[in-house]
Image 1 (cartoon, rainbow, N blue to C red):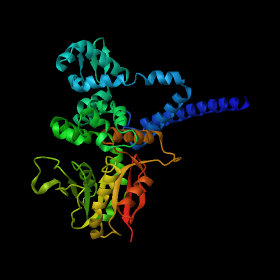
Image 2 (cartoon, rainbow, N blue to C red; image 1 turned 90 degrees about the horizontal axis):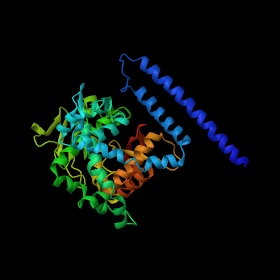
Image 3 (tube, rainbow, N blue to C red; image 1 turned 135 degrees about the vertical axis):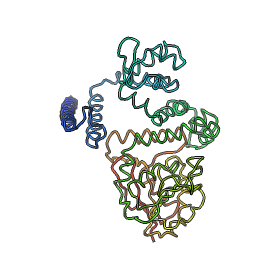
Image 4 (cartoon, rainbow, N blue to C red; image 1 turned 30 degrees about the horizontal axis):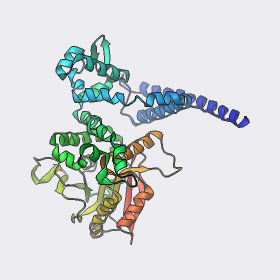
Length: 420
């Protein structure tokens, strides 16, 4: 009984403590807002983002402490119906059916969408509860800041549509995929392939319209995670490679190299991928002034790039099985040796799962664990801890050693060298 009383007292004290944190954080946010030259909250400042994230974390903790288990389960069992409303809004272009800065009636929105007014209104009203759209007067809707951003940015709209369409459908087949391979994860039996009858890369080759949306959506996702790009740029001493070339292995459309090239004009970048980012590639395969494209399959031996000072793998491993990761890493070894193994690092830009007992911010932990589920669903792959990364590196070449891990965001930069 005494232990129970102490436990209750501890819980009460934590509730009071978290409530105090909320007051402090709100005061700091208001102070940051008052120091802004705009009437709108300064969403783009690093301090506002930090305080806002901390406030969300503390508020969620307070809700967890005070909500009953029944309340939690009640919410959980119906949460996926929110995605139904988003699916309607994205698939039938409700976001762009309302002009920016104006309003539109449900009947007008429905006519533009080609859907009956009843279902359009029901979807809009559920999204309105979440602050996405606003019913200005009965049956008349306008934009909120969130819906306006989605309406204005096709890349962000595409990023959302991917998740609400093919990824949402694939996720619902996770248990079926596990039943087909219950004792080990099999990349050939991913939830995505079970749902659509084909691996994800084949699916996009067979559906060019969805492939185009996927490519644009990856840019949108990157834009939403701009902090990760800023961390990649600011957390590592790129200027030490001045005059040299960074090889962006599996670099897709080259948005990372183009971003880095803007900040480090003394560096040159070579973006490698199987497919060119554009069918109308500019003369000389140029993506930007100091960024060029080179077709390469990263499972094949890495070609020798003159004056290569570093090799970058950004999000090229978390979507691969352990065996395929080892193949990718092994293929880099001869080029690293040629470039100078003691001075030319392999830079792995990936999320790094925390080890047991390692404390990281809750928002980062959630993002990493959700990303891990995403890899399971789409590719039968996974996110990894630093120890798991080292195990892959050692399997590829026993000389590979992690020298350092840079950055304080979800995505880290793992610096790897070949030891003597």
